[in-house]
Every structure is written in structure tokens, then in C-alpha cells.
Length: 173
Ligand SMILES: [Zn+2]
Image 1 (cartoon, rainbow, N blue to C red):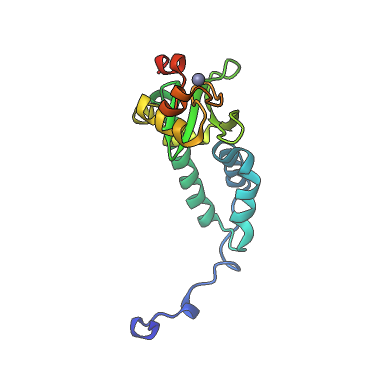
Image 2 (image 1 turned 90 degrees about the vertical axis):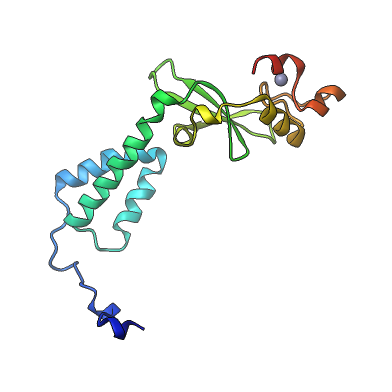
């Protein structure tokens, strides 16, 4: 029912031929920011940006604003995420500070292997004091997967299986 608004898809301005392309400075800034914000996914992200062929200076400045915003959300948790174990969206995360870089990073407990998989900095955006692992959450997770989520060991002792956590590990929470 576009006719009632006097605006149809055909009226949409085609910016491609007239709008100037992003400046080299913008391109560089976006490349740098994308690497910070998207890490290993930066190339995919950048490819998607230019995929629709309407890669203009105006578009680029919007992208820069979005990336700056995303970066500020990423840096916020640095001071507010406590190190140690966290639980969110059914995942157990361990937050640690890298001795090399001084930055926080995460690993996630893989319920299939009982191993901690490196998950980088992205999950930090979803973690805070409120996601700190509680004994209750640890038990529920352990009962569900049969793994102690503090040490990653398979629970075998019947008491521990029922409690969902090893006796020593429970004291560490
Ligand atoms: Zn344990």
C-alpha cells in the first residue's frame, strides 16, 4: 500500500553514482575498529559492509559511529566483570586476566569434553557481577551434564552425581 504515502520503492534515492566513496582515512579507521571489535570475524564483517555496493562516505561515518559504540560497550566490562566462574545462557565461563596483555578473556566449559574452550573477549559483554556462578547454578548444570563445572571432571560418586558438583569444588564457590 505504498501509493497512499506517495512513496514507492522506486523513489528510493540511488546513492551509488553521486555519493563520494569513503575517504582512505575512514577506511583505515573502520579496518582498525573492526579488528578491535570483531577480532577474527573482522574480514567477514568488512566484506558484508561493502557487499551491497552502496559503500559511501555517509554510510562509512554511520558504520564508524556503530563501531565506536560497540567498542565502548566492550571496554566497559573490563572493570566490572569479576574474575572467576560465571553462568549465563546455560554456559559456564571462566574469566581470567591474561598475564601477557593484562586483558580479561574467557574460556567456556564444553559439556561434551569437560575441557575449557577459549572463547576470547566477546562473552565479557554478557557477564557482570550478576552472572557470577552460584552454588545452585553449578549444581543444576552439573546434574544436567554429569560434569563438575568447577573442575570439568565427570561426576562418578553417586552423592556428587546427585548434587551435581564435587564436594571439594563446592567449597571453592
Ligand atoms: Zn570438581
